[in-house]
Image 1 (cartoon, rainbow, N blue to C red):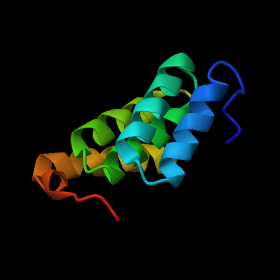
Image 2 (tube, rainbow, N blue to C red):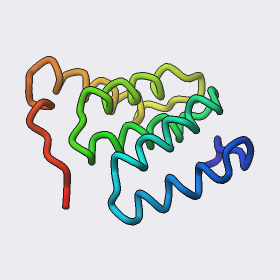
Image 3 (cartoon, one colour):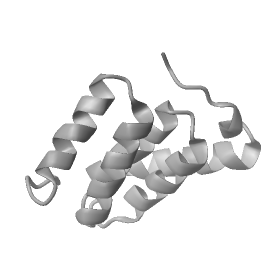
Length: 102
């Protein structure tokens, strides 16, 4: 994505991507969260953390990271919609029953 810079964290990006390709969603989520913290203007890293947490079945962390992504200045309507959807799921208890996708 265009809002990602190669630094800092090129190693974390490669590691996060490798974990995601292998389906290790918790590890990918953790690495994308490190990147999101290191690049505070990046919407992509924060939303990637949200996606990976969702795939890992951790809807609370997914909602948190989607909210972080939505709060960043470059967040578009799509990302803001994800944040609203996960917040709604948590409030309606649907999110508590998400299961990882095999």
